Amino acid sequence: MISEYSKLIRILLTIPATSCTAERSFSTIRRMKTYLRSTMGQSRLNSLAILHIHCDTTETLDLNCK
Image (cartoon, rainbow, N blue to C red; front, side, top):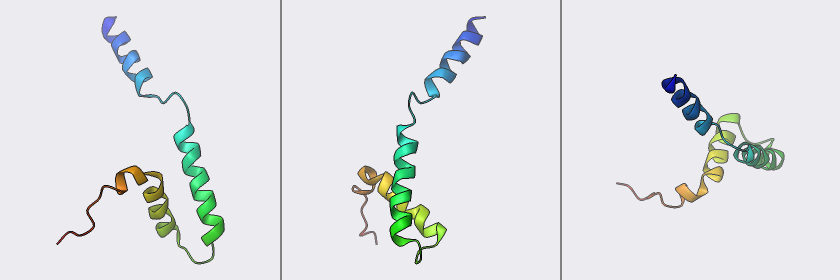
């Protein structure tokens, strides 16, 4: 019985409380897609959206790797 409660609590803790991250992602993609719709393929659009959404992480990347 306690193990079932433990599983339930773990599941509840992994579910996000809001959908803000998803909404922000869709908003970013919508802005990019309307501006660059005719010249950008889906793969490039996805890559740019990921870079924009996770810009706090991408700013710390070392792009001068040898």
